[in-house]
Length: 550
Image 1 (cartoon, rainbow, N blue to C red):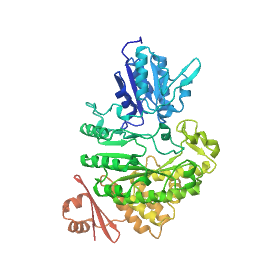
Image 2: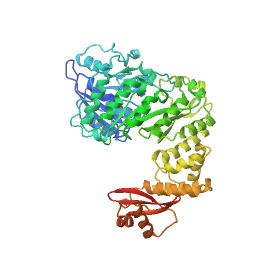
Image 3: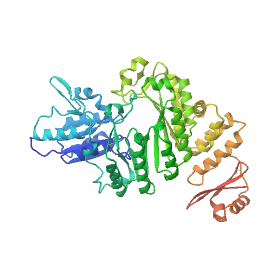
Image 4: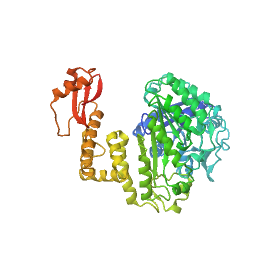
């Protein structure tokens, strides 16, 4: 393009799933002095489809946001674009900020924006449009005859000066069906050696009133699922409480807000306030436990008061208002398999509704990747750079942990038989070892973890409990049967042998709860023995209901 011409810019987001939205490119678009066309795809989209869509716009410049999950497909698309049309290709994002040299040396990108991109991208577009010098733009990296050049990264100090991307969302019919990503702060006050967040500069905040206005705008346009990107949402407890109260006062049915919380920094008064005032399910807190091993935490410069964190999680779980999601990381330095089993068992014992067991990733730019040889790390050379082994965990050790992760994900985290699993947990010396044995039993039976039906899952659990807990089997079996019936959406098939005379039992159920007609009991009900009495689950078209009686 000639200097002075109007820039035609395409921003291309390649998300992990359709329900996600790319907040970074929306912020870039809002701050850019030229109109930007945002095209959004997923990693399941065909690269040729993405290339065709971009090329049809005849852009002067294309911008990509690059992450662990999309780096390969972005490279493929960028290479195809370069072969097909003359356009300037710019990339940014966490996966390329700390590995800019490789993306420039191989010619994939013309420019890379490192760190926060709003101002750097806008300045680059202005410079290219006017033909002025862009070499002094902070955060910019490029390659010339002398090699790769990288300007210093300068965090944006005044976040409030950035325009909001959430004030002009008219006509976006996808809002009710997708996650909206919001920011109150950027940066992180901690220095965990495996994380990129400490490299983003000190903690800076957007004005609280601006965040409130963004929420109102999105709610008014139909958005119902929100996730805050803040690394530590509760860093300022009083202000965080103000924002939570604001959301409570304006919440609508089906609305969900998720936050990353540092669990040991939650004050008791805020937990009590949430347990008293928050509508159940409105808030989801993602809390990183990662490890209970103090030596492992010290090795990665991580500070954690585990006792206080656990007490706070217990209060939230018992309160029942906030959905709690806990995170663990397998593969941290100084934590062998015996220590990780202790970490897992202690954390599972909190009985949070969701426990994600992840595996350490040696990310570009992190101190832990730099010091990987110190701890004997081997990790995959391609994204996500996941640990293969280190000097404390062998390949076989990590395979054991992956087996447990599979059972954890396919049963507990999916809400399968949670009441029965809580009973099992109370009787099991170690849930890690129990999940490990469950995995082994499943493999022996040829169980298909990916495609197993609901009835298959419960049959497996029932047979496993019969073998592992013969003395408690009768009680746990009753709970499994009821859990199965309550998990089913429509009247399901039986997998247990016991049958009872239906009509007399339904008459007794109707006496216990006459709000359901006797005809509906007979037509839609399934009755079972339950503990010292009976239970019937009625699958009426108007809704399912459980009635317990004697």
